[in-house]
Image 1 (cartoon, one colour):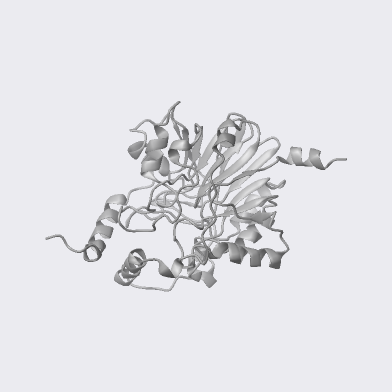
Image 2 (image 1 turned 60 degrees about the vertical axis):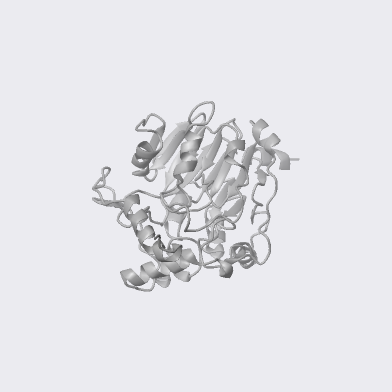
Length: 374
């Protein structure tokens, strides 16, 4: 007789985690690079001691995760419905000349670069951000653009291996899109996962990146950037694959995608490489409670600080409103973002949030300068 779901869940979670990853030697290990390790990768800077995670035993830790995953989520329910809007599919499919950003939900975005290139970041269209179909963070809002309604995607940029950023089913569907497969741009190690699980061993459409690596794509420069985070898809593969943020730029337009990150000196390092700043950025603002989450995700206050330090002209908050990843209410981040903006003297126009499905049309720096000239 089958066990009830709640009794069967611990063993199912453990089994799925064990199958999802197993320890291996880092095939890209380079002893000359400080963030490389024989078994994987490490952050550039130590964690913030103010955000130290309470020490718990193995079984206590997993008991906490299971309680979290089996919760009905009532403590995270929004105080008001998360705003959504029907996507402007006519514009999205016709747009070839204007930089535009469409929020699909969580960390999934469609970036149209203004020169005819369509890029997806961390596409996840599944109902759960989990290795299991019946447990784990459940989607609270439908994707702002259905996978089947997307325009032809030229490139997919992946920040890291966590389930709310790296989706097997979504990537398989996108790789088989009409009109030809997109290029897949991935951190070191994630490229191997893609070849094994998505492309059937074909690596011709996969480009792998270490921190600061660059590639060209139809007039664009893509660069993978260091941030403070970690990676895993199972119990025994922690930090075996790399993680990071992305910069996409061309003459007259630049975009920063934060992926997941805790606040660190990496931000100053990125700012030094991009002294002219960015026209547009998507920066995480959710999953910052409890406080020790902030060695992996930034609070809204830290997100505004990143916006200022990177010299971003227009930022939108992401990583909220879709999957309940932190212990704050799923709509708490925008309220705390408003407090942080006021405290740091940043306007809502400079750093706000989109409705799920909304498209933000962003004039490039050159166009904005021309429009403001007498």
